[in-house]
Image (cartoon, rainbow, N blue to C red; front, side):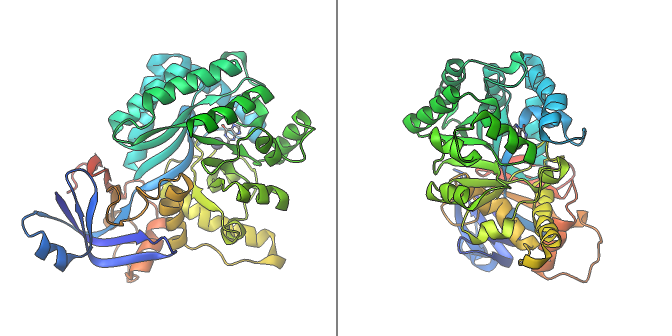
Length: 433
Ligand code: GUN
Ligand code: ZN
């Protein structure tokens, strides 16, 4: 057993954050939270466990990235242009390199290593379209120790030949990967069916994906309504359907285990379809700006009751940092207000953005019975943030709320000093406790 003490902050299912300024977390040898509460009580009830005490630090649930592309990591923070040109210019050639197993191995290790260093403990990942590269990515995630919902990207249309596969190969390879990895690593590794988007999938592939998801009970992740040119492209490819969302609906891809990235330009009818099927949304504010895609109406979507997590969407987004993504989520609501002065909405603040980056992400992935906050019985996925790394030092704004605001807005790359998944330390900063 382990006993961690210090300022604990975690999201509540009913909304808002709970602050325990002198709090304690007790973790079982099996990696589960067996106590969360006041330090004095823990010291009394668990007197025989040595205390790991963190000063000038915040103990938070692990960060959840609900949408990210592993094979694009090398292109993070470079490139220009909007979605469709960007895919053709930078992304498809990069993803093709994952045919090389050695390259796939090195890139997968780097990706997960950097993610845990930034405090991400759970990721919903798109691999390249190669079966072997996805296998290698699962091996790397297993060794890195974090939690993933991940799949090989399926595509059979409108991209270079060397990254396309037939519908049957896409489905058979995906199901073979699911058989090998779904539930592995003590449940930490899960398989997600990953059709890239309607623009790179034939009707046959979409149909077979829907059938496989139903038969196997698997998650689905894909892109929806991201960019105006993309919307026109989808309308040309699928003239028989009234909307982009309707395309996915027609092929059975709208399920309670579906995570739709972006979802910026949805009509009321499309929102109703998503709501009826209880689909989740991966909100990707950094990417939405980097690729000039648009500004999602986050506040309205929250008010409408969508399950929403945050996604870095690397390399559409330029950083794997989910604290940075939380800041951008908050800022995106201000940008929305600037663009729509007449309909100004309450903005999202740093605390709510942190809620989305933790419990919001867990809910979006359907993992909130296992992770997302410090409820006793959940897995101990948490991070220690070292406030000595957040500038300005010696600030007089030291209320817990201000600490969270400074942590989110000041997101320093080295603020995370320790990352723990299922009770196991998966990252520890050099020279830290
Ligand atoms: N739509 C289809 N593929 C992609 C991708 O790789 N990134 C983003 N942001 N959007 C997409
Ligand atoms: Zn994406």
